Length: 564
Image 1 (cartoon, rainbow, N blue to C red):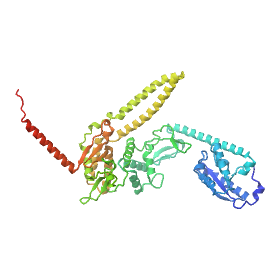
Image 2: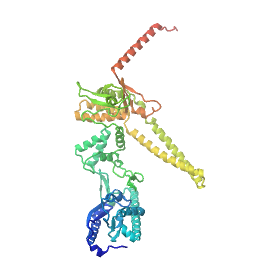
Image 3: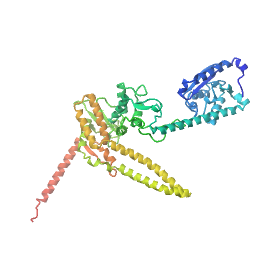
Image 4: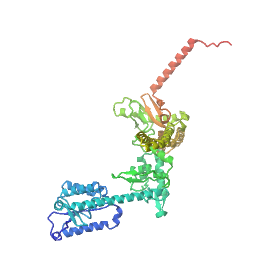
């Protein structure tokens, strides 16, 4: 193999020629060892021997070369872009401790990377062997390619074997987790590990658990993500792993099933995507949130989708996200013209307000609508909606479970037929297995829907909650009133599907009528308010009807009963 010539190395290098040192290691723990010092020292020694200065040292710290990540996302990718654009001149030396620092990917991919670099006129030097790879050398000595190929195959096989061993070791540890063995000291921010080895245990951090429980309570009470983040930062409540609270770390808390005590292991695929591995392990972590609160927080967050808008700190719009124009379907704008007696708050079609084509010009007093919505709940007979036995989801769930039972009962006969290699049996078995998988997914979705229905308070409880909150709202201070109005707004969202505004009347559609047992017929529009003109029309029609009835009675004369 070609070695660097010591005599030639002592001669001054041509003007302008320089070297770039590439340093890489896969895990942050390697910083504590000798790998960084060793790679830097080898590059400096080569530079002194050959009298070629190192212009730049590129570091890919904690970046793996097994799947070519360093060439796609790391600092090596920056170097490759500079080479392809011509900003790094031909004749530049690229110094690496060994060829596997550049790539541990499949041999053909490592070869492609090598040719990409060498074809651009860059000279690669493997410092551990003191071997140079360049266009001139490979033309004179093609056998050098076999040395590179052998190194690439060995590096890839070593990484693949290491990956397999790590994966198997992790799976073995994961199996032990069912028996209470702690897999790792890296835990959710509200927990801590105590002890070492087999004596390690997981314990909650009380002050952080209180923060998690407060976040869930605020979500259930109707606070959106932005307001929860503001509350946490305004009160200087420290986040678990960052400098400030933001929506991303808040969402991680609200969606993490670790609060329920579950642990879900993940694996990273070749594209760097994390995918769940196996079933969740229950009771691995200490539980800090109940199932009902987790479901309620998720349902409350879902019910607020599409309701984003600026909320005043003093006057919360009780009906935000629920009010729509019946003429065009657009949302109603909440217009604040000041406080009474001179000012008032109004609802008006946002499309009409923007002159976007709707002709519904009616303007409704917001306070009157709010009172009518709150009062209307007491006049609705909710007794027919409380029985969960009438839930269509429960009926469908039982039907699908029965279908799975029939499929499993037929498996034994099909398997016997498959042993006889009957084509029809093989096709039937494959079809049944596919249908069973689909049914399992459908059953999981139905079970989640039932759990959500059973966790959400019943309509009569909604009204009791609203009555209690309205009572507290009468004498509440402004800041307290804002919190109470937020809670009332969220409670209304549990009950109300939407409120529709016509030019002459306003009606409520209740969520329960849409979800349970009323799918064969359109839900009822419960009229809560009519315009003055509409009330006058109703009064006239009623008077006319009474006059017609009186005339008909007079024409019939007195009613005579037959003698017995």
